[in-house]
Image 1 (cartoon, rainbow, N blue to C red):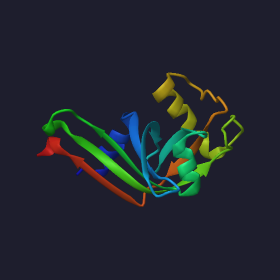
Image 2 (tube, rainbow, N blue to C red; image 1 turned 180 degrees about the vertical axis):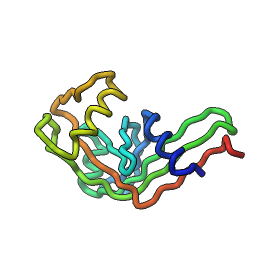
Image 3 (cartoon, helix red, strand yellow; image 1 turned 45 degrees about the vertical axis):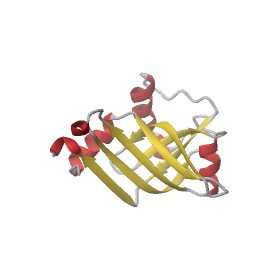
Image 4 (cartoon, helix red, strand yellow; image 1 turned 60 degrees about the horizontal axis):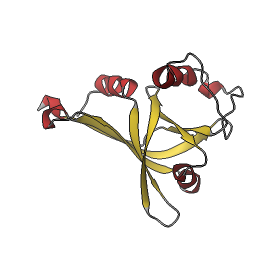
Length: 141
């Protein structure tokens, strides 16, 4: 498994995650999404007219996997699970929100190469403060 410092570095530098939700009928749904890590919580910026968003509005429980590596000895990753919270207006239009002040510039730089968040009126934020975290790093084997 990763040390806390390795976990923070990994989540701060990776870009893509896979988000597992549960549909109204109980069926699982997995989708890829960009994210940001603030050292405590994983932030997901989702289209509000997506199946993922509808699932989360119905049932906020989620499991998220972030991983990397190709060969067996390179594999490393983390699974975070818990319930998301919805933060800011839905959809996000850029109204002042203290919880997003530090996060949005980090997300914008990491994913868009911009200094400010481009709000398009189609996305909104969820925050996952994981109740369970499991990591692995096969490079240590």
